[in-house]
Length: 113
Image 1 (cartoon, rainbow, N blue to C red):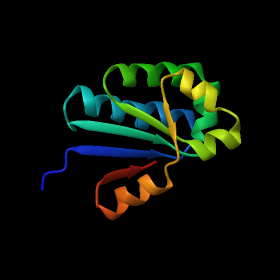
Image 2 (image 1 turned 135 degrees about the vertical axis):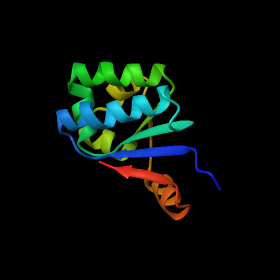
Image 3 (image 1 turned 180 degrees about the vertical axis):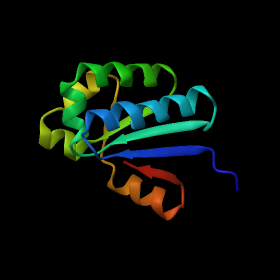
Image 4 (image 1 turned 60 degrees about the vertical axis):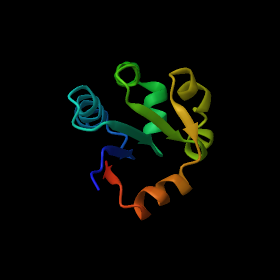
């Protein structure tokens, strides 16, 4: 079976990693049709980075406009107090434990950063 969906599990709050890997590869994967669907999953510390960093916020807005799905772990966002900010940026916020487990069990394409 030909896999056409890429998931990027983003757990590293480093700004350069966010800009030069997560956002760059995620956006280009969609724009250049390397993957039909691209989902970036914000988990842990990057939720705080996104809420506080205007550059990363702009990168996320651009990715969403290009068709990249951006979603954040609700438990993390709630604990970090950033849920409303993420929602205001157009980021889906949901509990990801079961979803990530399904991705892994179904052998989907997953990059962890």
